[in-house]
Image: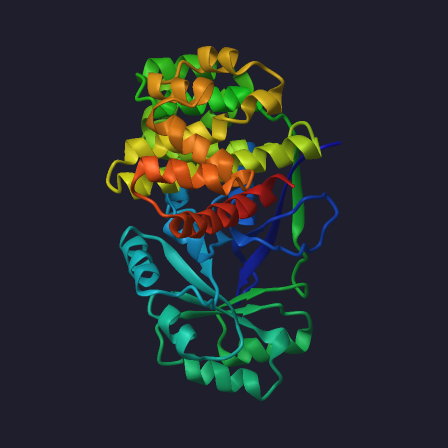
Amino acid sequence: MTGFFLGRQPILDRNQNLVAYELLFRQQENEESVTVTNELAASSNVIVNAYGQFGIQNVLGSQRGFINADPELIMSDIISLLPSKHVVLELRETEQITAEFLLRCEELKKKGYQFALDNVTAINDKVKQLLTVTSIVKVNVLELDQEKLPALVAALKPWPVLLLALKVETREQQAQCMQLGFQMFQGYFFAKPEVMMVKRNDPGKLALLQLLTVIMSDSEVEEIEKEFKHQPGLSYNLMRMVNSVANGLPQKINSIKHAIMVLGRKPLQKWIQLLLYTSNQSGDSMANALLQTAAARGKLMELIATAERPHDKNHHERAFMVGILSLLDVLLGIDMRQIVDKLAISEDMSQALLSRDGRLGQELKLVEANENSEVESMQSILNELGFLSLSELANIEIQAIGWANRIGEATS
């Protein structure tokens, strides 16, 4: 039976009371561990499943959930889907630690988010940078012998952090960590990760795209509510997620309209995009490849629009949607005119998709010429557009492909 999967491993205190779970990316029911090649895709999958498919109360109860958070996730607005009271964001030593990233962590700390530094085996300059925003340090005791572990604990003493012993596998390791003053414990000695599962019921990709378009077009809440009512499974998913997110509110969310208003338009848009990329209803590898190409188109269109009008976010979003939608006729086997009529999108988007006219149409022609390596056509269109060079296009194409590859792994 196909389904959604989520791993969770208990985190215990010194008296072996449950204090939290680490939430883990899983693709099958019997997986003890999985090799994650892309942190953003895996974390997106965990977030969608924990909040939408299972319901966060069913996953965590009254405990917190530790979720892996790579720099791209921290910098994105996906974080707005995660209430600070539910999660601890796990950081790792990485090359991508910038002043901007650390500032973002400080801002999130002020909003009540907690950070844990994961898989620590030594202190270096990058670890020291991350310790400035961290409240919990997860020390990998499996990698440290009986001499190195006390030395690391002593080196961490000056920092105001709680110590969590990670990968505790023997009674001897547990006893040593108790003696060294560790406050929390996680590992196979206590419990292996449990894999939770719920039956898969994906909304259709066209329905998701239609809903995304309505949300992005500044439609009234009633219009968005109407779209949800056409999708009972999606409505249930929304209600469950928003009740999870809004656990501290004085009353429960009891209508779709109320749920939309509580969640907010931007987080709702991000959630639908996540569902679109993690949805894999057909299992068709050709469909998935097309969807990934459409994602790359969307991102490249967005980056081109950003270069053209750096401060016009509405223009960036419409460009992204044109790219995403431009292969939907092939993906779904439906004439593009039907799709455009069904989605009721703006006139410049329609012109771009149907006849490659207008500014967005020119930019879509440029993206298609680039995909086909038609250098003369590309140069001609770039000359007409007048704000981008061939080398600048090549640079942003690399960004777009990287983004699409990372997101695409969530559907594989």
